[in-house]
Structure formats: C-alpha cells, structure tokens
Length: 170
Image (tube, rainbow, N blue to C red; front, side, top):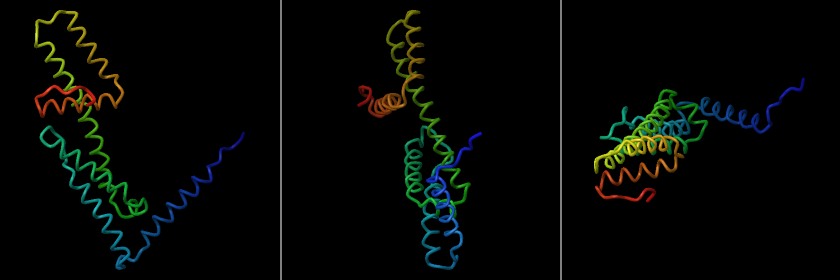
C-alpha cells in the first residue's frame, strides 16, 4: 500500500514556525528585544480585551469596530509572537467575539427582513396567498448568498437610521 508523504513546503513551514516560536520563547525576558516583542503582543491583547463581552443593539456598532480593530492587530502580529506571547484565552476571546458578531448579524438580518415584511402586511388587509408569499420570502432569504444578505442588512441599517427607503445593495 502506498504511503502518503507530507509536502515538503508544509514540513518547511511547520519547521519554520517551530523555530520562530522557540526563538521568541527563548529570548531573555530582561532583554530589550523581548520587551519590544512583548509590548507588541500586549498591544494586541489590549485591543482584544477592549471588545465588549456581549453584543446588543445598543453596542453592535462599537462591538463590530472593536472586533475589526482587534482582528487587524492580531493578523499584523507575527505568527511566532502570537503563539509564544499571547495567552490562548485572549486569542479565544477574539474568536468567540467573531462568532458572536456573525450570529448577531445573522439574527439581525432575519429581524430586519421580518420588519420589512411586516411593513408590507401592515399596509393592507393581507390575503392568504400574500401570507404565503411572505413566508416564501423568509425562506428565500434564508437561502441567500452571504453577499446579498449583507447588502440587504446594510439597507435595513440605513433605513433604520434615516427612516428613508434605501434601495437594496446601495
């Protein structure tokens, strides 16, 4: 039976990461170099800690901004420094916040859609076929591509803030 070998580029990348992480771990904690790298890691940790613990309609915009700032800082930090100097619980807070944000946006999209559909049904006496149309629209929304959902989500946010009708995707 043939054996599967690991690609040499993967071995090189793994070896490289291993040596990079070890380089940071083996630095003298009293050296200027260590303090410089630790300061970078601490800056990222502080940005992650700045993310609110929970997301709600009151803080959704600030929550999203904090997650974006923290993710950008995290991505900009050298992988070796991240692994060697960032507490895994801090890193997990970023991942959890991103998951909360995604779930909130998904729920908000449905909430906005239901609000828009409610506007339709409030404008006149709704027939049974129109109720079925609304239900079908909800089902179709659930199957939309993420980009289109995002465009509709943005439209709903703009309408909520301005009170004006905003074409979807603009």
